[in-house]
Image 1 (cartoon, rainbow, N blue to C red):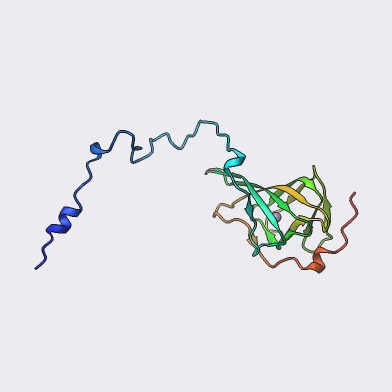
Image 2: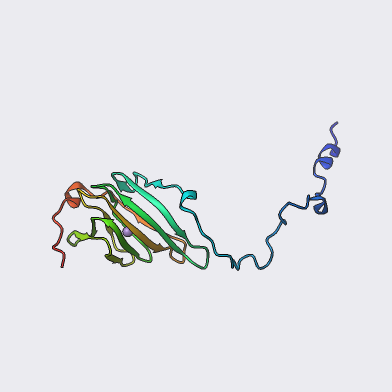
Length: 175
Ligand code: MN
């Protein structure tokens, strides 16, 4: 008959005082949430990611800028679109701000005319409004995209891809 002795021996309590002095403490100190050190996140340490084909048409790259730590819910990334590339239709629970960095872009709120957007332009997209954004058909385009999660932690809601017919509609004159 097999007794419990082998198991008892295998779960002997850990003697914390026996940890080598270079091990981190088992729990963060009480003031750990209050980060006071400035950080410089080096570009070389953060690789460019390919945006997923499920939510984008064409070749799109994304460089993360900020992922806020609570209580911040801020999210920011630089998104780079090759000519003709664009997001799928989508909406943001707390809205979105786009700051156009380079090239020539397009943005459309559902039911309205396509708009041309250019470097230096800022686009304010209200909460829960279906829209898409991307490059012009014949130009590269990049923007800084800024949005926040809502209080339930929900982010972007994604819908269908933007058809070529919708994408190629004549843009409104720039005023
Ligand atoms: Mn958007």
